[in-house]
Image 1 (cartoon, rainbow, N blue to C red):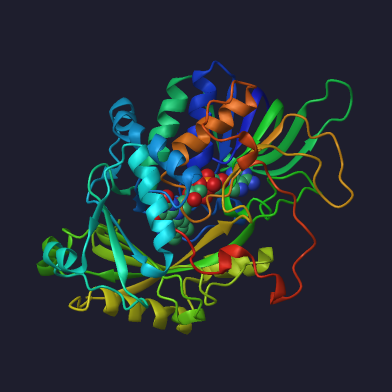
Image 2: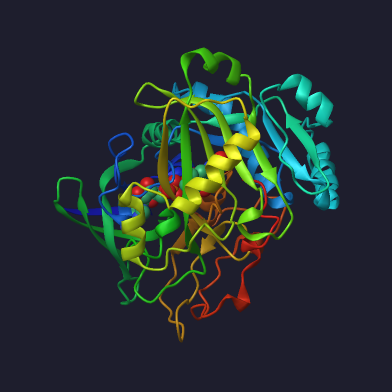
Length: 445
Ligand SMILES: Cc1cc2nc3c(=O)[nH]c(=O)nc-3n(C[C@H](O)[C@H](O)[C@H](O)COP(=O)(O)OP(=O)(O)OC[C@H]3O[C@@H](n4cnc5c(N)ncnc54)[C@H](O)[C@@H]3O)c2cc1C
């Protein structure tokens, strides 16, 4: 099968689906290539089939760690209800979002409040007593010096990422985008004058596919460097990490009570290795097995490991089990935050997050990357690097990517250089150059 398109989007995940919608709405002839959703809770069959959107809940809030994230998240969140109405697919649950900020980052907290206030985002500061009154099931974590509670009540809570991707793809299709269920195995440029981009891959049924395009947007997620979505020799400075989660099944009797909880993120600034208390927690969410689970995940403590090779990554994604150290930490944190919870059962989830040294997504043209550099990358763009919290800002990230691919006017309040993709440096050899994202505070998941 040979296909032609003005723009091929590689990856139909959170960023790719949003970008495809905006590209198609701008009149571009768009082909999106990405694997379909795996069977619910099923392990991915290949690295290209891994998607961070294959789950039921991702935290939504407008309050941002910095102005970049705050703006991405606010612009996206402001459009979510309209997106639901246009697509006919509901995905947002407004239960509120609570950030428990260690007092040690008081300056950061004050700046976050200043920025959200300036953007018109309603965030309440709640004392420990007020939090105890409003959320009697929630205990405050013993972060040194205590925590400040920042509660966003409206338009915040969690979204269903599978359904948001479905909604974006439905709207992309309605605007004329073509969707191909399959995966890309190789991307290269025909270097003859006016040469096109050539993509090689397979459909879900194993049929070989070739596609030719004027421009390519690679939105292949955390495993972009491992899944065949970049031209040979191109390496982004983007790192994949294990993201162990535990799902605590909630008994029917407790469910209604606990559903009053907001989403919670704890920011512990103390650099105490695995004793750092940074975590995120989702209130009971219904999973495809019909059961309700409270879900808990870590910050970037040392128990979170980097996935450096394709073999390691596949073993993690398909293994179905987290380490004993990770399970101990997550269980202890659950007991700390919801002491009264008596889970009916507990099960692990093996996810992957990506991190960039800028701590922001990469959105833009892929320059001459790789050792020694090489050219011929005109027309190749990326939208990757959600840094573990890209779901809530994905609509704006996709819009910005589409703007750049089509050469449109940059209308984001911060310069486009903020999102400039960074080429990979030589591989790290020791812990001496520990990247900032592995040092607390880890930010707002
Ligand atoms: C456990 C966990 C919890 C998280 N919690 C939050 C949260 O609370 N709030 C929040 O905002 N964000 C959260 N995130 C982050 C968020 O889910 C990601 O930032 C977001 O999904 C990134 O979107 P993406 O498009 O870059 O990647 P993805 O959504 O993973 O999409 C990438 C797509 O590309 C496809 N692909 C890869 N290679 C190829 C190829 N070669 N050919 C074709 N297709 C390919 C994949 O199959 C996938 O569908 C969380 C992530 C994880 C893992």
